[in-house]
Amino acid sequence: MQAIGLHFVDWFIILFYFVFIIGLGFYLKRYTKSEEDFFLAGRRNSSWVAGLAFLSANLGALELLGMTGNTYKYGMSVAHFYWIGAIPAMLFLGIFMMPFYYSARIKSVPGYLKLRFDEKTRVLNGFSFAIMTLLVSGINLYAMALVLHTFLGWNWDVSMLASAATVACYVTLSGLMSAIFTEIIQFFLIWFGLFLVSILGIVEVGSFGDIMKRVPEAFSHLWRNTGDPSANGMLVGWGGIVLGLGFVLSFGYWTTDFLVVQRAFSAKNLRSARMTPIIASFFKMAVPFIVIVAGLAALALSNDPKSGFSLMSDGGKLNYDSALPMLIARYFPRGLVGLGITALLAGFMAGQAGNISAFNTVWTYDIYQSIIRKKASPKNLLWMGRVATIFAVVVSVGTAYWAKSMPTIMDYMQAIFSWVNAPLFATMLLGMFVKWITPNGAFWGLITGMGSSFTMYLAVKFGWISVGFLTMSKTASDMAANFWRAWWAWLITFVVTIVVSWFTKKRPEAELVGLVKGLTAGAPLEPVPLFKRPAFYAVLSLIVFVVLNVIFW
Amino acid sequence: MTDHTPKMKPIWFFVGVILLVMGAVILGSGVYDLVRHVESNKVLSHLHAAVWWGGLMTAFGLLFVWLNRKSTVD
Image (cartoon, rainbow over all chains, first blue to last red; front, side):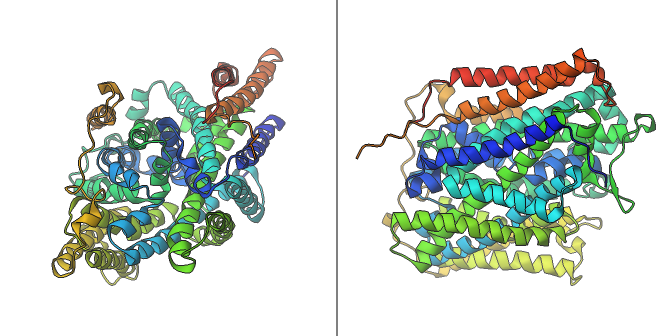
């Protein structure tokens, strides 16, 4: 591939960003005095700060390059990842689950499992989350180095190490606080740096309607072609989308993945914590106006030979991930090219920092303090958090090389989530809403669910069973397999947890007050006007969600 | 012992600073190209996106810095 040429002004903007966020790390270090400052950003964030960070922690490699490329490949269906695949789960977290999480004053999601069930379930989830986070973190690092290497022409190894060193520097200095600061800066850079691509794409083609006319009919609808899996690009029917993506993978990720939930824990009070995912839901619904519109514009331009637009190719194979950078190169003059590249880099670095800050918290509290040094002092925990940060970055470099050897990033991300998050969601759901679920039920349900998900993955990979066996369909893609595997893993966890709970010892109800619905008094109506209540904004968000699905049906 | 560390500035202030600096650089570059009639091979270059988009960023940056110039986080 040929690198995109950069002007001095572009280099200035990229360099300014790197210097600015490292400087910010040093500035924030002055305010990082306790373990709570380092791991929970002092629990002083407003709902807006926590909400934008909640969204931005997820706006990593997949969202920007991957989803734009996937839109080019699959069309509008990709918006399912933003709407049905996110919004109901985010609202459920804010309205129903956050009161249990926040009121328990826990420091991590595995910490809730310890309070609700027991130590072994917490450690099991702590280890599985830590491993998953390091794998995902490596993927972010890989994507970041890929941009520097492919589009700026930097050496691959140097790109990787420069990116890793920057993240290590500012997360080690001030932990979650600097991660949240950079996530919010990234949010604004992404909108200013990339939304212009969609605007110029629409201007060039004529209108959004003209773009839709120039893409294949099957690519221009969300639900209309999902009755038959073979009739849409993703080869997934509505059952897989609703059960696998909309229910299990989405709820599993948005309500139990500590990477995002940690941002809500940093809020200053319960109302702010509940508002965190609700505010984020509005912006999540808007992200397709960057990635989906840009992907469709790229496809419309490619279909017009006179436009002269085409994606990059590697050895004759189209590189779908190049859609967004190729549009940047097509439209942006000097200065704006630097901004566009900085927005991509910021997205990757914030995603990486989010993973690292979640890892150091789970490692320190749920593994180090739980198993290795039970009586660690607050000072020692702060030190351990910084050591864990460096350790995580070093391991991420290794997992980035592993990711480099993989054929596609997207499918492996979904596979990882289906191993860890999907079973955990069944455990959490039962734990929070059914009081007679026992510690042994939760532990054996979780371990069976994770084991079965991984076994199903291996069984398909090595051809022991066909993909169609999981998806109950003759035509199926890797994506369909991920969706359905997540559903089966969730169901197995759900059933095993209930069955084992029938035969094992329950915890006294007095110990579960505040942790389980039915044993916890409902929160009294807040003395605030209707338009300041989380439920009001959740309903608004739900209305926008329904309208968007109807418009693009 | 008293703590003499000044109170922390809110994130919105830093968002303003980075938007202001980047916006001003992009705006300046766009104005230079416009005034000097610099040739460009970019599609839609006649729209001079750097001028109005850089201007928009600068305005947002200025607004954020101005609104938060005296704010601190407790």
